[in-house]
Image 1 (cartoon, helix red, strand yellow):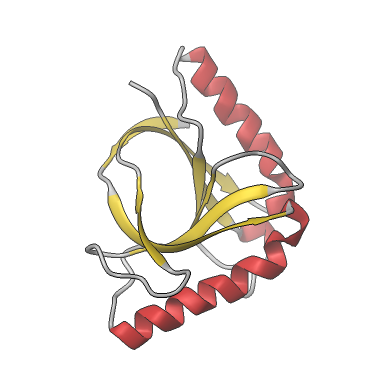
Image 2 (cartoon, rainbow, N blue to C red):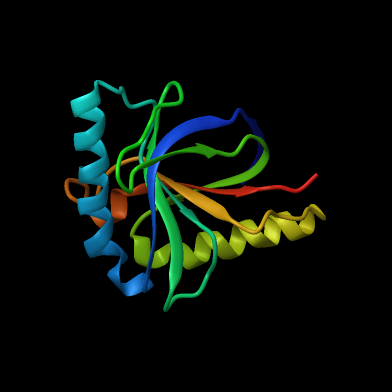
Length: 149
């Protein structure tokens, strides 16, 4: 766990609402839709896929998923230009199955509280490899909590 400084990063993304149980079946096709659009427009990827969470309502999750891009690019249809936040951010890396995220989230939130810091009302994850071709125990995910102030 650490506090880092990060520059804002332009993205292309789709924002939607879904029960958390449906995330595994909705994310892949949406990432595919965004990647196809980027390929069609010749927009290069500038980092791994991300998911930004605007609430923690497991029955009606407000989520934005997409890819970082090197420079701002226009969207089309439900694909829109966005931004990963810059500034001070608390970060932890989770290694292992997505089902074991709670342990890393608990440790990161305790770290933030111990430092006396306050987070923004959203957070995001960055997926360093894919469950389609990586065993669950080798999955790597960065978890980011942007900090206030």
